[in-house]
Image (cartoon, rainbow, N blue to C red; front, side, top):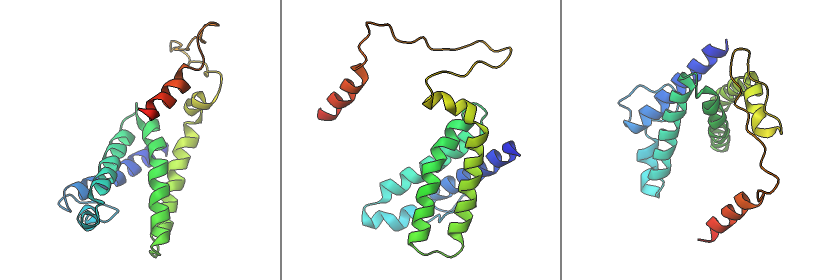
Length: 158
């Protein structure tokens, strides 16, 4: 079931992005293929192209085994924004379709929860049987712990 959902969402978003990028010459399953053309006169053509490229890349990521979890993580804000836009524009039926797609994507994240736990937990989960551990060693006691925040703050001021 999980593989089927990944492939389904991959097809949906790959074709949606390609349809926008090719101005409707590629069969897209969801989304308006005219998005870039309609938003360009308002100065939003680059943003619409970014959405189309993002959909295409996320769809491709969902097809792969290595990047499927990352694609599912990236799809959450994409789907949430699409859902908000369709609700704001009062499109009939479309918010329900997007809500189902969002629920499917959240299922993918739930299935991969152990892989994602390493992003928010202090400990890295143990390696699967037969796999070598890629545990990260903790920083040395004398290592400056403020280096990353300092680089972020310093980079903003440049």
